[in-house]
Amino acid sequence: MLVLLYHKVIKNPGFDLWWRTFDLQIKILKSTYKIVSLDEVLDCVINGKCQKNVVAITFDDGYADNYIYAYPILKKHRVKATLFLATSRVLLEDKKRPTLLDYWEGKVSWEELYRPKSMKDANAEFVKQGRSTDFLTLEEIKSMRDVFSFGWHSHWHLKAFERDEIIDFYDGDGHWSLLHAYKGDLRKGYPIFPMKGSLAIRAGSLKPEVKEFIRSLGDSFFEKRSWKKELKELLKRNFDSLLTFETEEEMKSRVEEDFKTSMGLLKSFLEESVEHGAYPFGDYSDELKKKCGEYLRSCFTTEKMTVKPYSDPYAIPRITVSKDIWSFFAILTKSKLGFW
Image 1 (cartoon, rainbow, N blue to C red):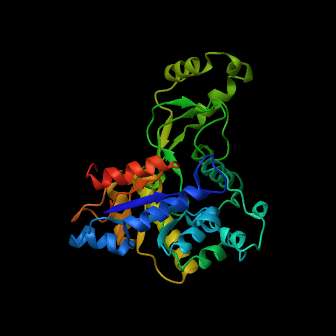
Image 2 (spheres, rainbow, N blue to C red):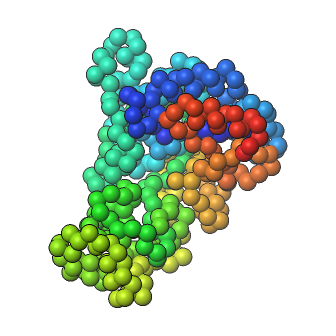
Image 3 (cartoon, rainbow, N blue to C red):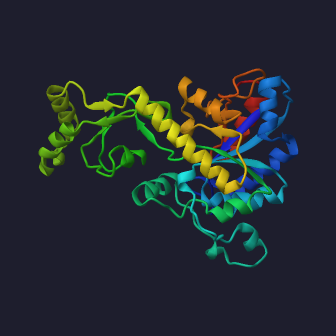
């Protein structure tokens, strides 16, 4: 049994999965696999009822293009899927944007269809401004319920610093979660540490005195060719540690609040409870698995494996589908040959 993970389906060939490629993939899946719900996936995991040539289709986050491009294609092929929503991203608006179906029916021009942003740009815009039009509206979510089921994917959907080990310094590029980790005060020269989904770890924050030290170096320091190497040595010489970490209790309280918020919003959006979830960024811990067990019947990872009978319902693997068709064929071939 195979569970596939998608994020974005875009208008033109480029940074992510083109809608025409997605259309071809769904056509292939429908002709060669039985497409099942997550309830049937869970039946395999818990009761061992696993069939051959079976696939479930999932999406993460809740991007506008899921409605504009993916939804019409799935509907055309009469294929069901599950979308795990990050509830903070949902636009609480009653408007719907034109879709591929509207274009096919001649109701709108090609130019009128929304051009999606990259995942990085969409999430960075959200962190900076508190909203991004690259995510779904509430009305769009409600309009997709004939094709999509919905699940939990946290409220805030962020990464946090995991451990006190410098891997780089900010120079204008980096994961969008850095904006949140530095609470909007992200400057050239700030250290970058290993990051993980914030619900799975005790989050670390850069000490105020370290920030002051870096700011005191002045702009001319960062014009040097070797400023990163020099700064790493300076920090090592002047500080025993750079991060402070929240306590276990603080982490548990934050995780509980995120669950209460996200599950409450999902129920209000959908007027029913959700039963399945997906860990943000695929990151989980024993503690997070237990918390999922309090709210959900299953939770999905991003571990690159096929689903096995009698396995952990709170660590069900999914395989991420990349943008090119040949990688898609490789996933299907490897799963059928038992390589995963």
